[in-house]
Image (cartoon, rainbow, N blue to C red; front, side, top):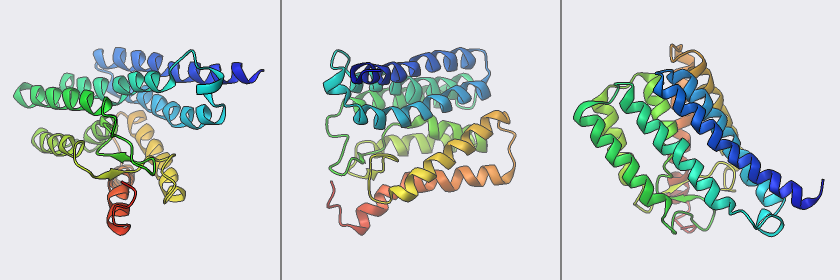
Amino acid sequence: MTTKLKALSVHLLTATGAVFAMLAMLAAVDGKYDLMFLWLVVAFFVDGIDGPLARHYDVKTNAPEFDGVLLDLIIDYLTYVFIPAFALFHSGRMDGLSGWLMLIIVTFASAMYFADTRMKTKDNSFSGFPGCWNMLVLVIFALNIPWYISLVLVTFVAITMFVPLKFVHPVRTERWRMMTLPMALVWTFFAGWAAWMNFEIESWTAWGLVVTSVYLLFAGIAQQIMYDGRDI
């Protein structure tokens, strides 16, 4: 296989995320949220490996006909934002006025964030919460968090999208990567297990999700405090 074909194959791998997004959406419409999250976990895994492959095969040089960054952003908006927000509303966990507020906050704020040219820091972390609503919504489902606490969480996290706080990228942020990458993989395992069990989980799964989520949420902020924000 030529280098060009390998680079093109990376774009094709990224594009499978759109297929997983459609499968997740169909499951959500049918109220099969366990299946929906399983597809989103698969999409999350693909999103984690296509970036390193794209850089390894230098897709910008070897397959420039397709914009991998744009393709990735389109799929990320579907799998990270649109479908999780729909599921939170459609499931009844956040409906009525709180649900409408959540839909407006999540979709509008995320659209603006994804288009923000300042979203990446010098050390390849994110400036502001990176719109990973799929992770937050899965935790809401798994821990059965009440709607009023969910609304507070959604509002607070949306605000952090536009403040100069760092959030680590599990693959690209070099500092603490030996800890962050395994944490992301462990989170993926717990998330997949919770969905597989239709969110009827035992305490070890719940605690696993909480611990890994807290680390991924606050690791970048901890780095910012410890290293005086030199990387922003």
